[in-house]
Length: 314
Image: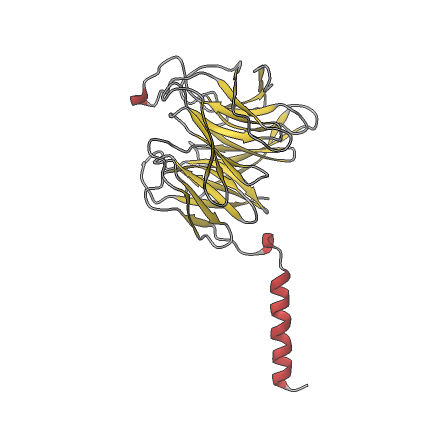
């Protein structure tokens, strides 16, 4: 075999090898820049390596690619609306919590078209903060407080509760919604915040930001029990679960704690703690491959640059 033929053979083999390397083994960017002035809060991973980030500033939604870092706004600014927590369901629908507008909204993940709007309360009568979607319903948290409703000091009105949008067997979204009062302390804004499902259960796990704890919540009755994990969660914000592990974004200390639950119960312990180097106020997170992605809202400075951070998991 001549030298040239050997070179061609090696090159062809290299191309074939690259083509079969799984996405999890590729080098994805550690930081992804968001548009200037975007003011992000919620992040969710969609189909493939796509991700979505919502804007507190104008309610728009940015769609990007974790592999390339490229993206564009897929949901245009929505006037007075905000987008706080965000979730993408199995049908590629984007569910967003509308913060002080008292709304929940649903968009098409491909086109950004509006599919449904729910006016849970009047503006500033609640702070709709985060959402988790199951096969049966979408559950939105209210972070507001009845103790000191002063929007000028970010003491948004509301109470510890869930807004529940039923989902039919074929995925159809109900036109109506329910409200469930949650038996958790009404301390100050933000009360209830991040939300996900508990492992092996029909119950929910909800972060209480001011209290620094997680609650095990019955979504039908609102019965809630604090989960003893042995530590205070500093600024407990967004939650995301993988198996028996719930990852908690602690926004005031720029870290993410991995909380491992005992199978079949709500007992839990801290398994690992991940620092988010370079982030000012990480708020929510989602998982892709062997990494967790979190968005930096920069609540301290209230100005950009705004980025998504990739944190490798052990």
